[in-house]
Length: 58
Image 1 (cartoon, rainbow, N blue to C red):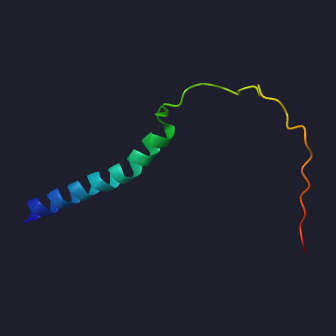
Image 2 (tube, rainbow, N blue to C red):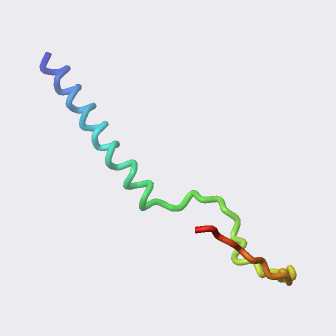
């Protein structure tokens, strides 16, 4: 019986350790983002020439 109690506490300690270590490793580990490095794109279109009136009824 004493052996099974030690086994239980050992596995509980392992689970608790993993509970804290996994998020810390994810925060401080290398990034896993696979976004393309496109940067800022310049505007190639023409600006809208007409003025738009916005009316609000308060």
